Length: 240
Ligand code: ADP
Ligand code: ASP
Ligand code: MG
Figure 1 (tube, protein in one colour):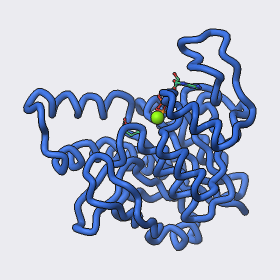
Figure 2 (cartoon, helix red, strand yellow):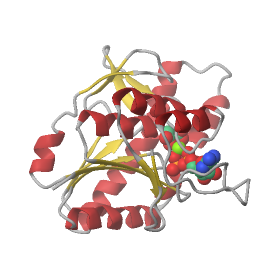
Figure 3 (cartoon, protein in one colour):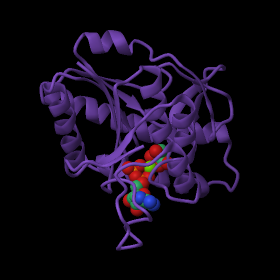
Figure 4 (cartoon, protein in one colour):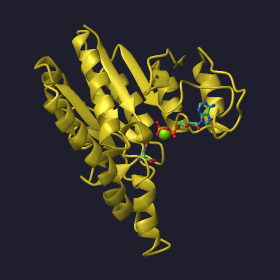
């Protein structure tokens, strides 16, 4: 039995049909005899919508209130996915970032992970449950909710995989892997079967949003290997 961390980004959980597709994939992984921790983003467009609501009120929103606001996007998704899994006969429980023991500094909207306990994850996994964790969020020492910057669910997934010593960390997204350039802009971009942390870091920091730069830096520092692959098919992706 292996422990899988599977992360699904915004377009992969955009609506109920997408969430059902994600749940079927998680169920397949469980059926293969593996334990699964799922990390999810807010549904596509939700974070942008929340940002624009705040912008309609003020040019300088209080960063603490921004974190209270933006963290709700991921909380919606964990509840919906946990319910979907349960309705398919897969025992599942949701965990917010704070409840999962993700401790951060107090740098609101750009918080850094200080410690990741995993809460009661191993106990829940031992009981045969899928644990569905909200990406992009943690909690400061003051007990305040914090977020990790845009694209920060990637960082959550890498950090969770590292802390739980997962056997496999899969980043499911809306392209089939990491390409030589953005495949939506450059039609003849090539999918790369394998990349080093350094190469991935270079791509990420030059603006390729397929993986958050901070997530790649964290993976390199803690030696957490991961695969970027499509949530819409079963083709092998890119191993970093
Ligand atoms: P998610 O919501 O799953 O986190 P993102 O939108 O953050 O997904 O990242 C995936 C997007 O990254 C793709 O749709 C693609 O347009 C873009 N992208 C930019 N550069 C690359 C690249 N080199 N390889 C793959 N995708 C890339
Ligand atoms: N929901 C956050 C964002 O849109 C985090 C993420 O999706 O990774 O940036
Ligand atoms: Mg992303």
